[in-house]
Image (cartoon, rainbow, N blue to C red; front, side):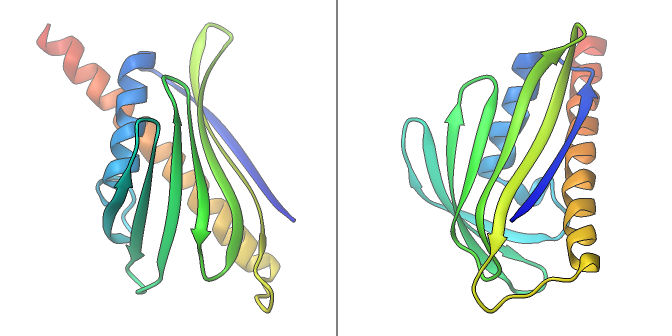
Length: 147
């Protein structure tokens, strides 16, 4: 079992942060540099199904469930290496808004990962959360400056 967790404070409103997380679910290539393209293939009131293609031509399918204003759950429907899910969570702690990522999964049968692979996976998740929190803060600053 693989478990990765990381959280960072975000200087943005809950509403603005949630909007950006929803946008990341819809168009992840805008937020994650190693994603080449994405396509939403099904849409419901509180979920969507999407295909993502990475720069290395790996394609995955994820079902994303929305828990408004605070959590997105990405469940791997089809992934060449992993079974499991990723959660993005917005929460309040110490009077601050925080963004966390939580990955819990396992490798598919026949896939072996070394410690270097796990380190790269963890670092990729951390960099993604830091980039998204930075974008949330930039949008919040720009909004405040124009009001």
